[in-house]
Image (tube, rainbow, N blue to C red; front, side, top):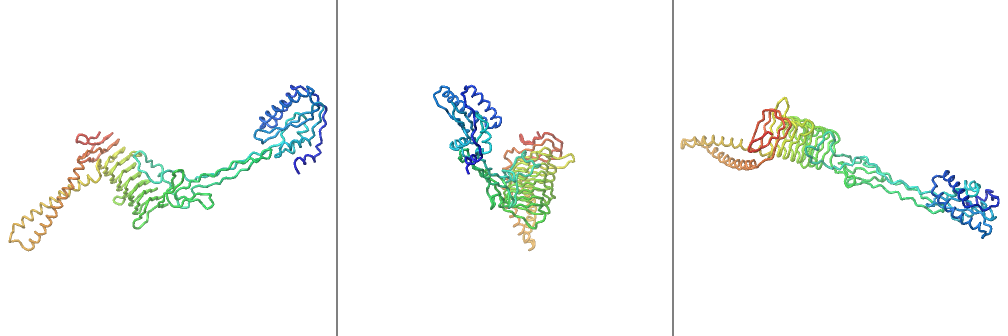
Length: 528
């Protein structure tokens, strides 16, 4: 049964109204204004529609009333006026009284007009009869459509941080904050990286004429799936496809595959050899031997152990507390650790620490101790560039040896070659003496003495050959030392004793100094 038929079954009946006598336009306008105010009070959300409808009604009433007053027209029956909002989601009606003795408007006729005006959806069946009975000039809603209900766009909830680092980077002395974790984010295979909520569809709307108003299409979320990251079978999550370091690249989560050891590494026979990067969640101790071709991150401490990165960086988050002769760190690039105690460290570029004590450091670049205590004490450092720190030594005394401004092997080579050359010359002198004494015996020499003489002559030839080699090597070292060096030692405070070597120059500092900038100038080592 249609709404039209339902209304007819309710015994609505017509309304009997008294004969209409033309009223002035002013009176009609006042009445419409009053009704408009009442309608807006009831339905404030329809204020714009009501105002537009009233304006149209005033124009229609003015024209109709004018014709009625001129007497040019015969009787005009009452009529229902209808109005649609701009979005066609609301329809309003108003009853206009008859003119010149015209017929009244029945609810049946009103509903018929409404039907043929094309208002077919959202008709307010329950309220129309009551509003219709309110009489002429009463403004009331007759239909309300339904707005399209938007769905929900898909959403991705990220469970890990968007870190950009997939590997360690060589830092300068002021950039490493050991209070913060290493800028790498390890992840295990199968770990959920993101949860994905699919889009939820909306609901189409419909205006009062029955026209479908499509709802906006809900958008799927951008799924940040990158290298070595897998989408689950149900499409509701992203998971790690391998063990490694999680990083963000081009707004996508990616994983740099590498070996991960969750806890401590303290018991391992032989050498643990890893191709690629290595992340150790705990400490390394117990005399283990670890080698990796890439970066090595140790989130705990290093004790008695040998750790080597053949192509990358070593970072020890909680410090190196080694044993003399039992702890070695070697990195092709940089070594980073807040504390280095009783360890041997070799770095291809530089070393960054906060405290270095009782250790031997070799690096081709600079040794930094510029944060925290910034102290270097009782250590031997050979740096290809400089040593920059806040303090050298402490009030308890001790001795440190620094060589700066040349490749670490050059000063060592000079000492080694010089010592070997002197030893070889002394040995040759002894050989020459013995050979001379045995040669003077002539025919009186015994078979045993002749055998010794032959051996000494053979050894002398080898020593002479080695002596020539040492001289060539020493000339190369001296040539390297002749180059001007910009290496220096800078510190705010220096306690004795410090032996500084820059090229061939050597200086032992036995006094407490402040604001040191130890360098070579005019052929001498200067402290300031």
